[in-house]
Length: 210
Image (cartoon, rainbow, N blue to C red; front, side, top):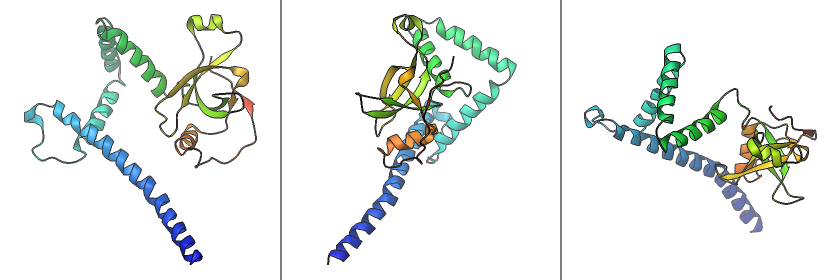
């Protein structure tokens, strides 16, 4: 009887391990596609398709983003973007907000940037406790005048939702750069440590961007 229970439990848990990630993935995809489908409501009623096709809004949105990126790759497109940015920055309230969001997006999405390009190991939230963080840069402005030694700026994501977290400035000497890709580190965080990358005993100090 005990053997049957153990077998049933192991089989049931195996089924959960297969179905839970699949269900979560489908749920996220449905949420994203459903949200992007709402972009069709921004079109004039005469331009909206008469037949409602699931995912059509997502396809059109992705196509629109691609076309905008394609157009801004040439000289004329870049000048138009510069003119638009200069115009929006002059608008009260909207200008500062737009500039802040643009700086963050340029930092995160730029292929030449260093933000979220390295996974780090730091002691947080107390001495003796370690967590994974991501390099976002180095401190700047008047903050540097109040730091006694060289620091790096890091982002510590929460588990299992890495989109929220904490911004910290940590001494460079106390940070360990991990021989781990950002994708592997995110999987490690989201899975709450269940999906662990392959072990690597090599430890080296971080070399932050200048």
